[in-house]
Image (cartoon, rainbow, N blue to C red; front, side):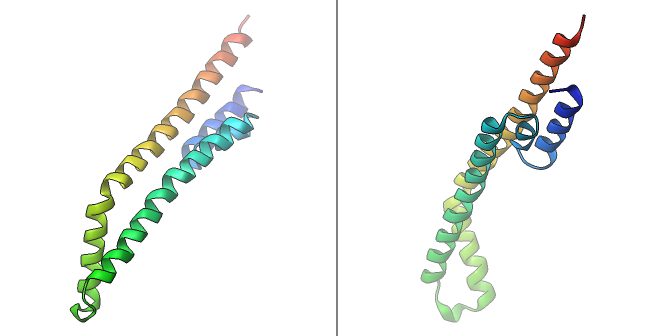
Length: 116
């Protein structure tokens, strides 16, 4: 493992997806775990928001008009699932920051070992 490879890993982790950088430097298990955690944190709120949206659309009368129904349903779904969406986004950001920080620490340790 060299410093340039770790720099590429840091960029991958920062710009593509948390975990991609770890996989690029050979830490495949850690990279897959980070990527899987991020995917779960992105998919869970989508599923719950979609279910809340479907439930809200069932309650709103059909004669209310399409735009009124849609905007009301989105508002109801957001009010019921906003906490989950925000918490999951905070989790994604935390994993993103962890991945970058971990790769920076790995790079610093590698450079310290390479010094005479």
